[in-house]
Image 1 (cartoon, rainbow, N blue to C red):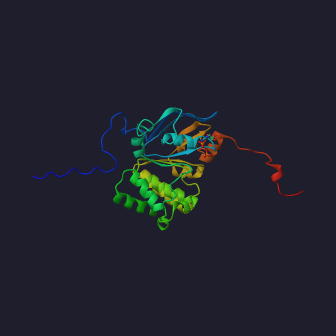
Image 2: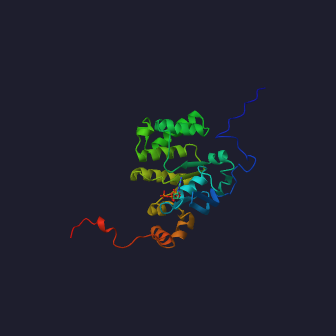
Image 3: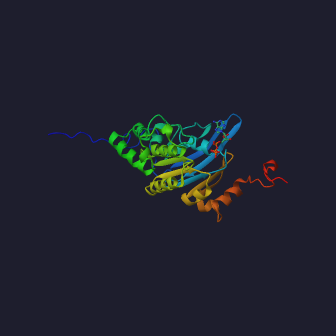
Length: 279
Ligand SMILES: Nc1ncnc2c1ncn2[C@@H]1O[C@H](COP(=O)(O)OP(=O)(O)OP(=O)(O)O)[C@@H](O)[C@H]1O
């Protein structure tokens, strides 16, 4: 009698709960931030942020320049250690169990630094292999992703020779290659042309429809209002409002509500010396 060998497990690592709270918790929010603080010298960038991002939501984070969005997302995704507070991804503490949490997380950080001496195809392949995927799976997913973000024709171009928008798109492909449960994207549409942005939006919407969670930071209120189902308005390191988009905008446009919450509109005559007409 012959015994068949054990079947290989799909994905990176064995199924079932790992000891010490490192396994995803059924029913937990996709991301739960509790009392997050971060200072840079005297500057308090994030001042005790609490945020619950429900699983399956398309969540927008908006705020003025310097509000603390990137700092918050960096702490939530294991890129920047908080001074205080916790960040849980599906119940897994990203700072206590970074390897386990990062398996279920895809991240497009702000100002991405990529291994740009690789081609686009090599970079996505490398990201997939680092996540523990086997070569045939990585090859198939790399081809699918490069086609989906419109980089098929540039798959063999070095990333250093990509434009800003192309770099953003290949970084997005890297973030998606291991089919994470939660995708955190800092300014994903910055420098991306409108057609590519529409394609990326569609990919993200399908991803949410398939049960994934997307968190995006953006300055484009109209986009967030159309694309997201939840939103948080952040300013000076605090959450000013959070909830469903309809709750937060309270009958107005998100942009009107944002300006009302954040303030800071500068009215008046402007800068006199910039007026070009001569009297
Ligand atoms: N590495 C750093 N060193 C010093 N100060 C920093 C650093 N990173 C962020 N800050 C400061 O923390 C504050 C929050 O910055 P952050 O990048 O999180 O804001 P943001 O909301 O993402 O802004 P933007 O919309 O302009 O990208 C700012 O005042 C910024 O100057």
